[in-house]
Amino acid sequence: AKGDMLVAMRLLAAIVIVGLAAAQSLAQSTGSSISEAAAPPPSRWAQETEVLDQALRQRALTATQPRELWVAAQFDSSDPWARVGALARARAMAPGEMLYVASLAMGCLAPMRPLPPECDAVDRLADWAIRDADNGVPSLLLAQRARSRNNVAAMVAFLDEAAGRPRFDDYRDRGAQHLWAAVREVPGTVDPAARAVFAIALASRPSPAVGQLETLCRDPAKLADNVRSACLAAGTAAAQRGANWPLRIAGARLAGRNGEISRRAFECAEAGSAIAEALESPDAAVRARALAAWEARLARKAQVGEVAACEGKPG
Image (cartoon, rainbow, N blue to C red; front, side):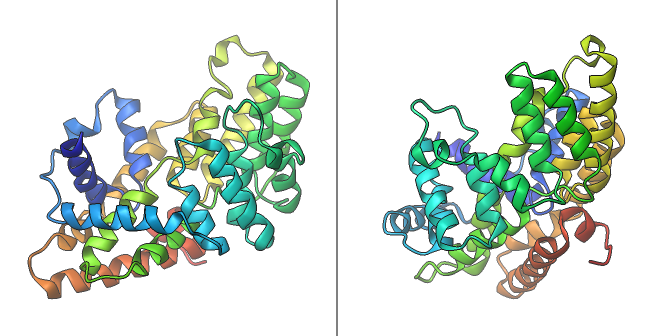
């Protein structure tokens, strides 16, 4: 298992810089696998990333500040109740940070019995939708929740609502910045390139929002005409206006039009491979240049979104 983790770290470093999930989606659509597309050797930073992982997990145990709590929640995937608790504290301490609002809403979508009081007392998904009114992602998630409850009328209404939203953002790129800040601040002499490789791996974890949309409009031939039409409109909007490639691919799937966006996403991911390779270089100067390039790309993605940053569009 440890060897598999190290291989995964190297693979993440190679293709996640601008979108691992995009490459995975392309592989799924073509019937191939990521392992078939690339078989990189283990990262030279395997020991360093293990040190960083343990250090962050220890720091998570004593987290008190909003960003620390949000980062701590990223290590609580096996305990959704603890994850929600940390996210709720971050949300309460920094109510204006939309990353925390969105993360708590998505955290409350996890299947939990009993439901945590932080999720039971407030409809966190509706709260996100209200506070982020021009964002179509919470509307899509509300549509998914309505579908799971067999409320077709509400599902269509939320899909129609999403179709009119000007942007779709799950704040994945904002989260990547938080993770990098946390990794960078871990005390010690770990090489900055190793820190970047580890931060890339952490940020590559799939977004709960994208996972929730997998079944929203499945089996379109079996859907009523009005539902199929609403899926097409909302999916097209997300495919055109999603902030990152996984969201655009999820939208394209809703609309039944996945191929072109998957190709663009994969090309964008491949464009970052030179940076990833340079982070593994034995030459400190090469690593330093790669780190600077990666940090600039990370900041740009957080500012304008992964797609716009990759395609060189202005913010």
